[in-house]
Image (cartoon, rainbow, N blue to C red; front, side):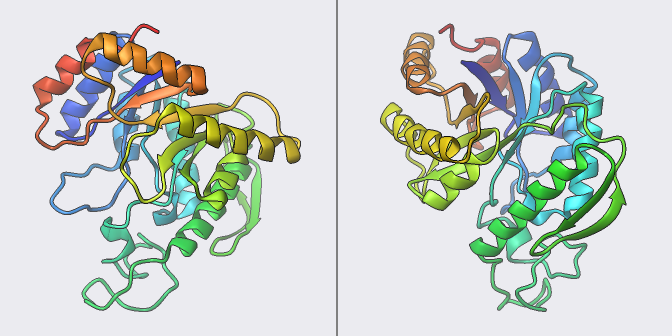
Length: 297
């Protein structure tokens, strides 16, 4: 099992410092998060932050928990992916999902606002109090479009994609990504949604979550999800490595963390990304937790 750490809150400079500490203390990955605006939370552009981290580290995997491609233009996203993958020497991973409902990108910006949500659900602008959030189905369609564009752009040559919401015709996106055939894509699988799990089964890994619940993932759920994914991948003739990713807080006690990790690893989890989303956790507390190092399994 590999272990990652999410830089949840802090200044941009402090988050880069956290990433450097993550590498120094033996963790396997550093992750940020992707949103336009959630309440009063301080929010940074994930791609700028990861670019800074890429040139300050040499070993750890880099990503976000999770990227929300539905709020980005796919061709711009392809360029961002290529840039960070090159800056990091091929260490980028792409955990992706639909984005959170309370992100202003899906409810408080209009389609003319630099395409932040890219919605086609209406012409209401950012000041319209009756603007409806972008529907989950549309976000899912936009996610699928973005993943198709990213896969096609990984080779760098002329890209043509005819998606539900995106259109590219012979767009050259050189130089492509360092990693081939593409940067690994880990898709949120919200159990027990079969549609969500089926999307995750088509790519390189699954980020495990419960549907409409913040309850932690346990070993029984991992086994149920993996049984479904293995059946789907076998039916589609898919093979090769597949990552099973958990994004939740590790127990504070080292022995308890190791025991929990062993149980989940036995069930099939390959990555545990520690995520402490409490805004009351101080910068010093984050650095102390990083310095404790990941569990020994």
